[in-house]
Length: 259
Image 1: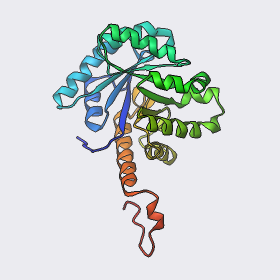
Image 2: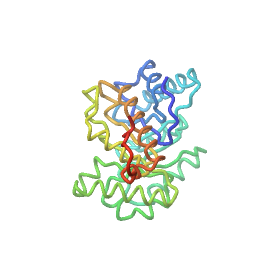
Image 3: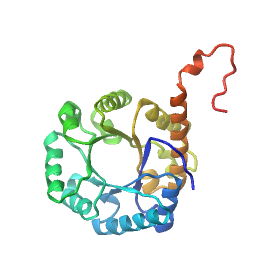
Image 4: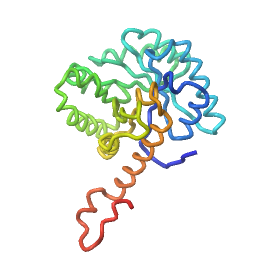
């Protein structure tokens, strides 16, 4: 079992490649903190069974695994029912445009006595325009870079990410960086060097969570994806504690570069 004292949490999307008991257990042991359930990979009933299995496996290991239910627009009510029935810890709202959408979800889950954190997925132009109001209404924010890259120029994505992280850090809201973080690991046992840098930079910028999607849902190496992401996070946080820029100001000393 890998045990690393890191602050940045890993969200792991569960799908056909990761829904059996053995893989769920390995994901928890390797460093997954939150399991994400997206209705495009299963029915609400099917996801409900997997959530039960995941909690059972975590209990065997003496761990707790948190549950995130992603609410697609096409199956909104089914997703809400699943989240309420299985007492999800997080509910992610897709394609949010206005704060009222989060307010309505808050009312629904409050009536059901569910205290799940509401996550706004920032992936529309409207969500950027109305971000201040949305931020006031939700608990957490996700930079959903995939769909966001379809509605704004792709070269602006890194800077929108940085600004969203800065605003959330100042407001005390949790922020998640998502989409294609280790995408090549769908078919490769090692990520690209650019992907490693992407994960590390998200941590250095101040993200609270990072997310794996297809990598763990349908990829060939779900457990290895978690293992590598955990190692990169741990390294990035270690450098952050040291002051990752200070190394270039040290005079008359050999650079160790973590070796």
